[in-house]
Length: 231
Image (cartoon, rainbow, N blue to C red):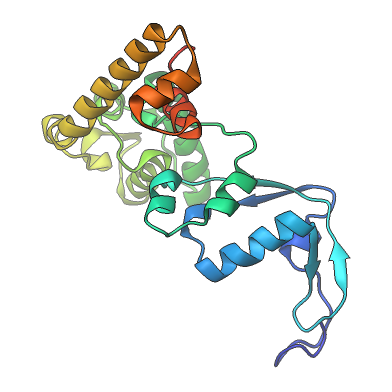
């Protein structure tokens, strides 16, 4: 509201109010503070907001789409994320597999990013060498798409070549990157196998499988989605 704080000379709608009738995207929802979690929960429950310095409740009709790379189940157990907010947001869950599991997408994304960053830098870079494409496909990408973006942006900025070579990407040795992820890969493999065996044993009954595995139904659903297990 106008006059709500120093410098507030005009009345302007906030982000939520601006998304009226549309979609509000909240990235990295797991990183928001406890105080902000309370405010967001109130908006989702009451479907209304109150402007800073205002006293009038304003109804909002906004679809909320949230994203995170954090394990919110673990964050709830640790007390870092509100359980009531989680279940308010968790109406439909879409699990995006990590970049290393989308081998066919890496080259396509890399070429698209290269074109974009080349145009921004006003450089004449025609593509990647065969060796560079191979190194992109072999790397495990622990930082996912953001790391891919940063590697290619850096390569475009620093290279004087007409094509991006492996040395431009400055990727760790494939053996080193794989060794660093061996434990996680092994754990994921075992976890997937155990879930598949339990589902087969229970005839696909999620409730029974969750009981045997000592996890909640929502957690089991998340694990099934993450590991791409067919029910």
